Structure formats: structure tokens, C-alpha cells
Length: 431
Image (cartoon, rainbow, N blue to C red; front, side, top):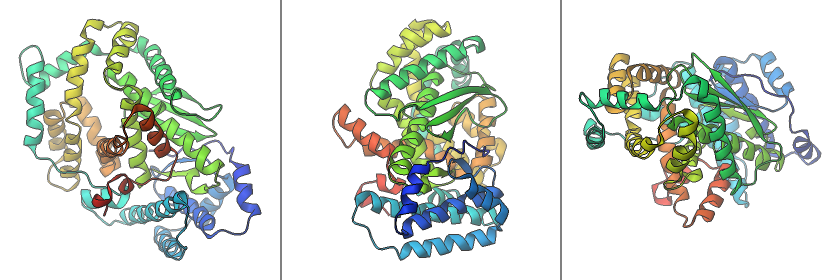
């Protein structure tokens, strides 16, 4: 998504620590990695999601104007240098080494794509995101659609009835900011009970149009984010908590702030001052953001908060909250239908119109929302796996631990450490 320059208030103290010490090959490689990512971003405007490192590094990259072929060679050189780094003893240092290696492989793969190399959907997701989503046929979704069909009132197709049903749960534009602001405050309060956030962390909210996504967090550095909410299409009541958690607490805003605090400021790991969108980091980011909703609102607490607080704020009848929550939980089980639409479309098995038809039929999207999703697929391709597969991998990783407090500890450590998607799987499932 479009790279926008961020605040140059770089973490000078953290970088000064490295400058005073003896040269560290990992720090030198990390700096070269940052510059390589920035250089790829000069060719791909969607590539650099955030950067809050030294402005001089970005300026030097722009002055260099390296070709894609040159950047591919630089990725190979950095990977070869990493192979010569002795295996560290510290657990986090081990994770750092593997993180840089895997991120660099993803950089190289993205450059190959920009040079014209074509990957299948699954090849691309493995190369860019260190993961492959399961494949599901049509009948995988049939039982869930049948359950939704039984739960919906009225006559007509399940798609038609679902769309009619949802119209009663739209947040009108004049109430949207109040509802979203209240949801953010609740998500922040629930997160603060379990995680220690950096002092002064904050964000602002903007309402925008003409975007292929429904919400976005632009991390600015210095524990600051800009959250944008797309109002092109109707915003339903469930999206208030979804977006507040996903983009804010304990989602993207918290994830980026904790990485800045623990890895950049505390350890001086400059590789985390840049975030390449098409990389394994995105699966962790999207997975923790989506699973963070269940962390903040376990069991039935979300429905109760929406019923008692958000429904009245939105001017909606709270007596419908429980049923709406049940139906939305069923619809959420169709999330992998989006992966199938993307896989089939990008692999050339179906057209764009057929992909939209698939989303209408098997994801129960409106025709307008399906068209928006196809535009997202065309632009971001296999990125779609990061939302559902990422959530499921994070859930399995966190839920191995028993007890809410212990799970928040594991979740918090995941937010502030250099963990990779393949590292979330049990040992016997890792490739």
C-alpha cells in the first residue's frame, strides 16, 4: 500500500550504542537490508509499508537509483554474508538471524516478481510469507452456508437474505466516529490490563474513500500511528470492534510500537525500522491483529459490549445483537473462500468476474464488496492468506498455553519478538 514518508525522529540513542561498539556483522547486514528494502520500494510503491529510520539512508538509496537486477544481486550477497555468521547462543539472536535470512529471501522473491518471474499462488505465498494456505473445494463451505441459510429470516437465496438482514446493522455516517472511538477506547483499556505499552503511544483516525481495503494502519515511528477507515461501502456494527482491535489495540499499532520499543530502541536492531509489506513479517502482523480481537474480547464479552454499548451508540436495536453475533460467527468460518478466489484467479483458472461470483456465493459478500475484494487481490495477490491463515497459526501458537494471563504473556512476547510464520508451527510441521 502506498508508502508515505514518516517522521524522521529516529531512535538516535539506540543507533549510537551500535556506533560506539566494535563493528558487528549482523548490524552491518541489518543496515544493508534496510537500504535494500528501501531501494525495492523505489520500484514498487506498495512495498515499503513503514520506515522510521535515518532520513539519510532513504536519501542515499534514492541517489543510488539501483536497478532491479542490481538489487537482486545485493540480496544474494547479503544472504551469503548471513550464511557466514556464526550461530549465536542467545535465543533472540538466533531468531534475529533466521528472521533476516527469511526476510531477505522474500525480498529476493519480490524482486524476481518485479522482474517478470511468475509464481503460482502457493509458490508465491511460500516465497513471500513463509507459509502456504490449505486448499478447500466448494463443498468445504457448503455446510456453513446451509447453517447460515437456516438462521436467516425471509425468502430468497442465502446471499440475498444475508444482505437484507445486514442492512439493519449499518452504522450511519453521522454516528460512525462516535462508535469507532468508543470501540477503540474499550480495546485499548482491555489491552492495557495485560500488556505494558510504551509511554506516549498514540494514533489518529481518518475516514477515507477510494481504497481497495477497509482499514489501514500507517505506522509513523515514535510509537505513533495513523489509522484510516474506508467508508466507500456501508460499515456494519461488527466492524467497529474488528477495526479497533485489528488496526489499534492489541493489533497493528501495538505490534509496531512493541517492536520499536523492544527491538529497535532496547537492542538497536535497525532492521525493524523498515517494514516490507510483501514479507513474512506481514503474516505475523495480520495474524496477531486478527487473533487480537479474541484476546481482547474472549467468549461472549464482545457480544455483550456491542449490545450494551455500541448498538445504542449506533442507534440500533440491542435485542438483535446476540443473533447477529451468532450469524457473523458462522460467516467468519467462510474466510478461506477468499483465498480460493485469489488462488484460482491468480493461477488463471477463473476470470475476475468469476472470482467476484465465487466471493458472492461462498463468502456471502455483496456484489460491491466482492468487486472491491477482487481489486485487492489484483493489487496485493497472495497477501490474502495473512489474515485467516495468520490468525489460525497465531491462535494455535498462543492457545497451547493454558490460562488467560499466560496466553497474554505469550501473545505479548510474540508481538515484541522476531518470530516467523514457520516458527509458529509445531516442530514436526516445520519445513
